[in-house]
Image 1 (cartoon, helix red, strand yellow):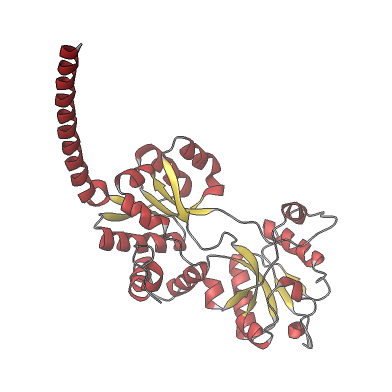
Image 2 (cartoon, rainbow, N blue to C red; image 1 turned 120 degrees about the vertical axis):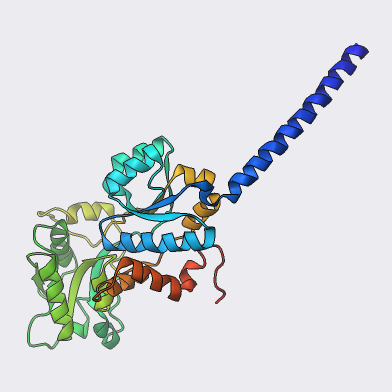
Length: 334
């Protein structure tokens, strides 16, 4: 037994030495891999067909290149196609504005197969629809902060004509919700509801009302240039009530009750390999939520003649270190 024990001990020592050598080799290989930015792979960032996504893609491409040494490339994308490609090929590696409720089947399958993951919410809020009033009206009537205050506010009294509520086109679902909310808040006699024929007429009506400094209320959504361009201030719509919203969305809602608009989940989506092969970059995206108000302002800048998403991204990086420094892990001390 003693001889067997010594023999076994000798084998064990030799095996341990071999394991140590193997571990050292693996550590060296791991260190070399970690030294390669983004795991040695190109970081493709999908810019969807709408402006906010294009601006975000350009911003992130600049920051991950500068602060993490990645080869970052902005590529065109669309939600369903990019989501499927991320899951099957790992490219694009990043989709900075993925509205996952609109591609639920693709997204859920990607989560099930653990090929794509949400890094963070794209914006600092998840409610993107609401009612707005112009900033000049709030300046004159600071009590005008919520939709519940509209009925009693003096902001809409004394004019020669009935103040307008600018809704959305009549064939949009929001038009039905807005009509029912007007009933729920007892505003039917207080406002003239205007339902524009299309998005362009909607924007024109708002622009003309602002130019005349009219007292008005408007439905709108974000991220959007119009909100910043015309200094529109969101009204508090109260809490979200799922049962109330189900009724509000019906043309024949018998007893409308007040509810906020529903939340939507909008995320920075990453291919799984970013988490495993470039964890420092994944950490960056896990911190990279941008204020919705800031995006509205960027989109307003994008509406100026000659502006491009790339130019807007350059300006954001140059002027808003107070926002992105926290993303790269080195927040500016206030």
